Structure formats: C-alpha cells, structure tokens
Image 1: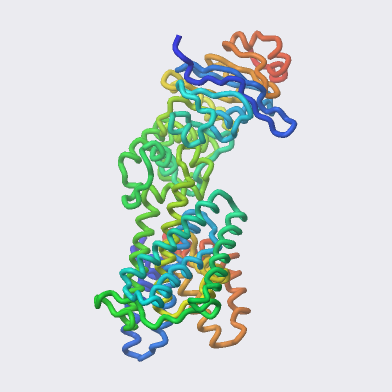
Image 2: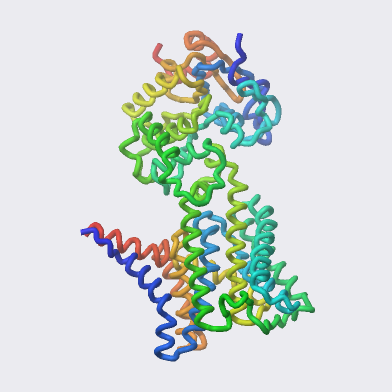
Length: 252
Length: 319
C-alpha cells in the first residue's frame, strides 16, 4: 500500500495545564477528504496550527509526502504543498481580491527578490490568480478591495488563495463558518469538485456538509481522538453520540 | 467628467514644477536664503522618503532613522577630515556604512514586533549618537567642520549652490522613482503584504523576515545618502543630527504627508519645515502652534496631506 500523504504520530501540545492535543495519531491517504469534528475547544484549530507550522509541537512527528516536516517553519511547509485556510478570515484587506490571490501565486513562483517589474502586470502571476478566482466563483470581484467583500466571499477568497499556491493538500479550518445556506451549498459543491484532485483535511461544524463530503471522519474530544472511521461508522459509534453528536441531533 | 486634472495630480505637479523652478525665482529675486532652506527641505524629504519605504509601505515603525543621516554624514566628514575629498570614495562609503548599520539593527530588531521594535531601533540610534559624541578625534560633542565639499572630478561643483540644489533635487526624484519601482514589484508586494498580515504571508510561503531585512537595508542606505548630502550642505556634522528627536521629525514628516503614499513624505517635509520657518518668524513659541496643528492632521486627516487630496479626488470624481 502506498504511503499516506499526511502521517501524524503522537502529536501533542500543551498550554500550561491544558492539553490541547493529546498524542494524536492519524493518517490521510492521497486523494482522501478527511474531516475532523469535535465540540468547541476540542483542539481542532490547534491541530491545524501544528500541522501548518504556526505552533510548534511538544511531542510527536508529522510526515508529509514522505518527509518529516515536524521542525519546518510555516513558509517551507507551504512551499512543499501544504496549504492552509484560516478559521478567522485572514486576508490582505487593503489589497484587491486579485492581489490577494496573486500573492499566493507569487509565493510559489520562485524567490521574490525582484525589484523592478510591476508585479500587477506579470501575466504569470495574474492569470493563475484569475483562474483560482474563477474556480471559487469570485471572478466578478477580482478588482474589488478585499475589505469590501461579504463574509461568505472572504471564505471563498481564502480558498482561492489556498488553491492558487497549487497545493498537494489543503488544511481547511471551518471554511463554512458564518456562511448562509446558499453560500454553504456552493462551498460544498466546490469542495466535492476538489475532492478527487486534492487531499483535504477539513475541520467543520456543519455536520450535514461533513457527512456529505468526508471519506473518513476523526472525532476529537479534549484533544484526544475518540473515534476515527468512515462516516457510517462514526454515526453508529455510541461513544461519539454520547460525547458530541447527541447534543446536535444529527439527522441520520 | 473624470478629468486628468484631479486636485491631487495638480498639487503634485505644482510641487514638482515649483521645486524645479525655485532657482529661477532665486536668481530673479536674489533670495539666497530660499535656496538654502529648500536645499535642506529636499534633503530631509529624501530621508523621509526612505523612512516611508519601511514605515509606510513595510509597516516597520523605526524610531531611529536619523542614525543613517548621521552615519552618512560622518562618513563624509571623517573622510574629508582625513584628507580624502573625493565624492567617489566618500559617498559609496556613506552608503556602505549606513547599509551595514541597517543590516545589524534590522537583523536584531526585525525579530521583535510592535513597541519592542520601536524601542530597539531607538536604542540603537541612541547608541550610535553616543559613540559619535565620544569620537574626540572628530570633534566629539562639538561636531566636525568640513572644510571642503565632496569633489566629483570636476563633473559637478557642490560649492555652487544652484548646482548643489539641482543635485539634491535630482537625487530626490531618482529615489522617488526607485521607491515607486520597488513598491510595485514582486518584492514590494511582499513588503506590503507583510505589513498587512505577516502571519498570512508566512502561511502562504513567504519567509518575510529576509524580505523585510532587505527593505530595511535599502532604506538605511537611502538615509545614508541623505546624510552625505546634509554634511555637504551644512559643511558640518555633529551628533545632534542623529539625536532621537530628529528621528521623530522624520516620522512626523511621513505621517503628516501620508504614510505609504509615494509623494506623501515630500509634502510632509515641505509642509513641516516651511511651517517651522514661518511660525518661528512670528513667535519664539512656534511649537505651541505647530503641535495642535499636527494633532488636527492626525485626528482628522488619516492618510495625511496626500490622504486629504485623495479624498478630495474621490469626492470630485463622484460629483
């Protein structure tokens, strides 16, 4: 069997007395969409931050595409093809939507010690950026200042930026948070399209979306993996129901 | 109709033309003082332009920018004192030493953020101040008189006030052009991105530290160039030119004119220094008038003078 694209082994993080992630072990094979669910404070975002390199881990290893990336800084993980979207929208608000995405393209187009040519006229940056905007349905907003876009559009722009860096894997932190039903539906459709091409680790509160999209689901509670398996296994798991799903009354 | 002649463009053009024609006015009126004043304004505008590159575009709140003026100035002064009068040696040395100083300060200070960054840049600049004040051989506290301006093998005579004025002006425009190219290049996009959201920049794959450090060094060298000009202008260098209040003046020029706008620092330098000149002629306590004026600009005109012109443009464009 081929080696999984992302392998996490015994990953831990403490904040003082609080254990945010407790020896998390899981694997995401190439091409799979793996969802992580869990109640608030379960350590989902901490895990994403550890995987993207924003937080250093206290113990455990992370392997990506056969390489040990545990010690790599954030930007090098991104260069390797591990792209992250943020739960709290994190954009360049004074730039246009196109500028935002073009920067993501630029980050993977060699070094940026280029001082003379106007970057906004460089076709090799602008065209892939436009393509990424088209992909997420934001083409018409290309020249809008990012601060003028709606919340849902910010989430789409986040995704466009992640896509523009031509990643091998996406780490998506609640891409549907705060979206209306229509926007959510569009995002689900988009993620379904991306599923075959990219490996995705998805954190999401929208259970309907998670069960519709995920190949596998891992349930985190207090930083610990309490279950991991195919959606129907998770739905049937009594421990998960007690800890989490029960309160949310997930429609079967 | 959205004309080409927006208020902002008209004012910018007026500044450029006015500065270019000033020597003509001087030769007609014989007002030699105006030439001296505006030479000084242009040199400080050049320093403000360099500060704007890191402060306005890069979001690096350096509180020690006058140090580069001092280092560039002392490079010229010390070499002149030691009998090396050629500008072809003095000026490259001025650029190299200020660039090196920026590299050291930047390498340490750019690892910190916010208030710490401000404090470290301030501390380094003050350190440079005390070191220079301790150079007994070069006048120490009293400063160092330069008996001969930089020589450029007869190409240009810096002792000729008009020629020197035009040299300063040409360098100011050259640096404005350079900054304009830089901020719109890939490098400039990284610098501006780092100002807006450094974490995100690193998340999408930019090692922002090395880009910011490079930017810091470029700005330091431009500051050193302004220092070499100042030394030639006043025929004198002293530790006072790198005291922290001088760094504060530069920040005021940038903020008053408009952070992160190309011509903003030029507007700011002209406005501040002309006001200073006019008000100090009226009263000894001119700072009592200048202070509240600056306060008003900061409170009501975000984006400074250039920001005001911009919003005027926008209002007329809609109307």
